[in-house]
Image (cartoon, rainbow, N blue to C red):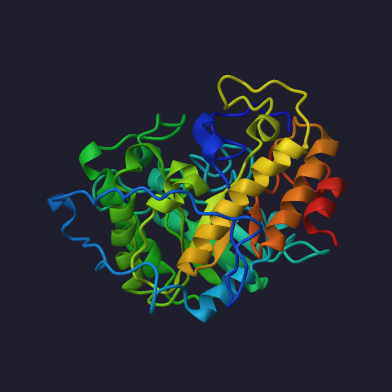
Length: 393
């Protein structure tokens, strides 16, 4: 598309995302974790923040074992996550500061693509709720925006889609600079707002069927590094008040990097699945991307033996962690920007697709119709080479 690329649009990426990866084995009994997979040395998990009286209204779940007898995901969770198969991110729509600010809206034409002509019926729907909620601790979500997101979710569900709904791009929560069009709040209420938003989302969608799944937060990083285990436990408790068995997806810090999985502490909840993101080799997937500084030079190709080894190492690292915990894992994002050579993008997508599926890892491609898009909104058709590499036989 010819429009200017706003900071951090087109994809969720920041330069530090080099750590991002992806992976996930759907570990039904006896599944292998992938060739040569070895978990990295696990540092002691960061302790939960002591004494958060400001969060007293949102207590964490009781602690419990993450592995061993009685832990791991319920069989229904494996079935649902594995069933996601080859999915898509409806990115740059509701995760923009306002719908349309990054060039896309949740138009009916995009909804109607789902399930047609061999296209997926699995959609990840990123939403920047924080910019549509009151600035106080109650974080009251704007009724019109809430209704707009709800309408989109229901239109997708009506098409037989599985939908993964998250909280996305709450910049102050991560400690990042704000995007243009985003407002700041009192730092004292940043975490309270996150939990209050989940309370409203969980209530609003509590009567939907299991095809709707939740993702606690996209790519925690920055100020969340020492806080994440505590906050995700509190958020999960909020969600469980009205959604006791809904599948909830949780990722590690470092922008959902598999490298950070050993630091992720899960509450003893059998309806939780794992997710990671994977954008290596970064010099290839993000060449020419204006939101990455310094800008990666053009001309990188894919996929050399060295690049393949990097891609597989990250997948195997995530697969080993999922095996250890006995939980399914979703590759929530991967992709290559449009300024990479087309032939290289096709090679990258085919290699990643085959590698993820060999490890029984369902995935969500980033993204539908912007700079990484598999769909060309100007020509109003799928980009055939990309579509075939992702969704073909």
